[in-house]
Length: 237
Image (cartoon, rainbow, N blue to C red):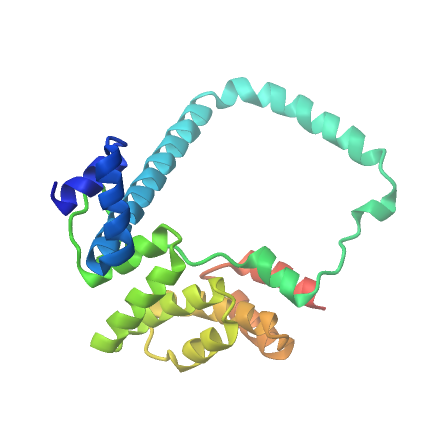
């Protein structure tokens, strides 16, 4: 059985016992086979995520079509919530002050892939495609390897931005800060996003002074995460 067929039968769960042993052996000893398998595994993860997103969109469309019916029940729900809230002691409304690590965790999630969309039926195996498939599949260790390889080929500010996001996810925030600070050639479309993520990295490294400056810049630009930045500033006080 060819290597491609082995992978195909693995995903369809039709490997015989003998073929499973061959598959396991190749996965442990053949680097190219392992990389090909990981690429297809990540691609399937991304496709599944896209299908789930489509289902959510269809559900939202259904909810919109039933908006009039739902309004009556929404009023009842709101009224019940008000009654419950009024019965709570006033002190329960105070927000607990979070430490910087908790603030970072509460606000950070890697920026979505908007520069290299992965479409259903994607067959390209370019390094860039592999990098973003791994990124979307949350296989961040593999994504970092691919981004590093891309940056060896050519210095690219957008790839550096996504690499820094991966480093933040991997808790290597000091390295992420270095990249964000040096990444001055990033396109204007992603400037506010980079300022937001750099502010989060500063918070994670307990540099609230620099974080505050950047959060104010994000708020002034109003292009990205304005409300989140305002709320985060209040929590930093």
